[in-house]
Image (cartoon, rainbow, N blue to C red; front, side):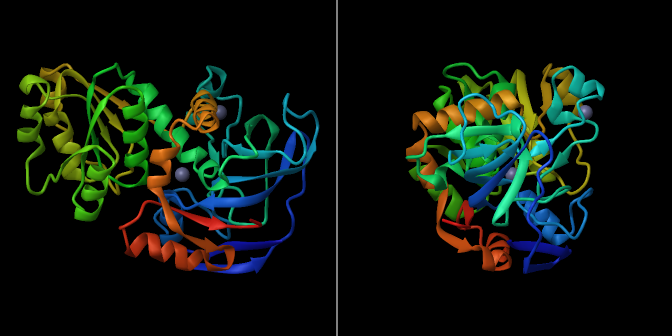
Length: 342
Ligand SMILES: [Zn+2]
Ligand SMILES: [Zn+2]
């Protein structure tokens, strides 16, 4: 099969690879679209702590179910359009046993530790599969995985109707969190330094703030009668934003840590203590959040906003390297897709 292959950091080639061989309880999927995620870029640049090479990259995708071994999940048939939760857990560690398989001690992610989706075919465990409507725009269905991240993060925050939330970082994940939070009834402000992204977010109906021009601590004094944001979603991974997050959140508010920082960042433990803050980490997503993301896609309730996040420019499989460079060098867009068999 045709596939992209990370040979080593900063070296991706378009190659022919062996077809995946199915083992029991696995499904074979003919990939239609695959999305580029920040973690693919980390692996490409050699910044991912646990990635191994050579590796077929990619974990966000939609495709057609071609074959399977074992018992298929109820309601899914050969030929159906499917998406999948793209990670594998051991099933035996304390996290897995208690139902938190997304923080498995031996978590393996498609495209990072096992062969991924920037290929004509990919295999996944049957239990990870979800069917999507065949008449759905497959480009939107390809966003199921990052949408599940956003759903998981918003669920973790336990948002309430009318909450004022700050999303720090207006990249693809920040924008998806903003969309899901808005859908959950929150009033969303996006903090971002790129003027392009700020204007884009404003046109989507979000409040905006540039933390270089206006301090987040001061800006937060205009929120909730001066008390600050109910919840801050920190997606930037930037030290100054992480430090500002505890200043911008209200007493007894929540800070959700999503962004992957290059190194450990200082936190105001005094803010955490004196304001009785809750600092919550989130990793990938629960299977429950993934199922919810699929049902939101099926219902079509987020389509209008998702189209705003989807980039018009779609790259063929042969041009994965050009697509990665485009994502690294030009941030004036959000979710970039690779087209395969579509
Ligand atoms: Zn991703
Ligand atoms: Zn485990």
